[in-house]
Image (cartoon, rainbow, N blue to C red; front, side):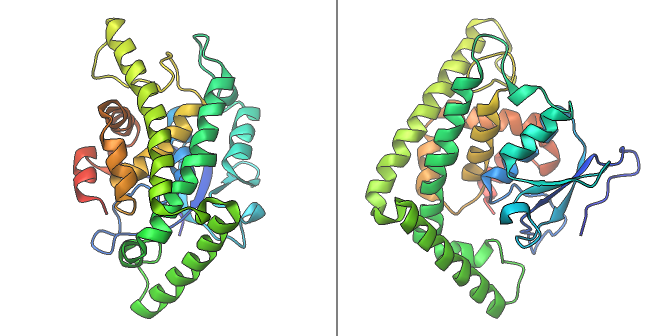
Length: 279
């Protein structure tokens, strides 16, 4: 079902189709997505002030079978894959070109950092979730709103598909200790960027409580949408405790995620409470 805007809000410019994972105890409470790509897209839209409504997506209906996807309100055009969605938003003049910064940190560094997150750390996230923490996903994962029988069937089926995907991708051939080593390397890179950016903001005489960007510039870059989309799910969801523990070791990373959440996702609730509850 498409979520309707409040009476005092303008009609949405597009509909965002994604996964649906309602909390049985609070079905109307917004939750950060299981998918880093959904969170990435939501952040991009909110950062640009683009109004959107949420709806349950379907892989058969999705372009290339990929979720999330969007449908534009003005012409009904449907586009999938966040990279193509970002390009379309740019072509329509709704966002700056690729979210590029303004201080010499160009598109290249941001894209490379984003690729490390989406093409490297993402697979280790999936490994920990679907090979190490299946019982948690069965209890409160993507099919938690289904009855017990259907929940077991759907979750087991998805696990089988994802484990096969991980094997053919290559990550599934490692043991978990090896995977954790790769995780730590990636998290330390992100932690270093966040720490440098945070310290730079303070040295520049700016308010320590404000939002800061991962590359240390004045504006968000491509890297911020990818990094924040990945990190927020790691911190507020409970399906990847090892990876979460590594992120929690970096105060600047936690602050980075919290401040963006507080500015752009305040309607999702208090961030510290979300981290404590970890649905």
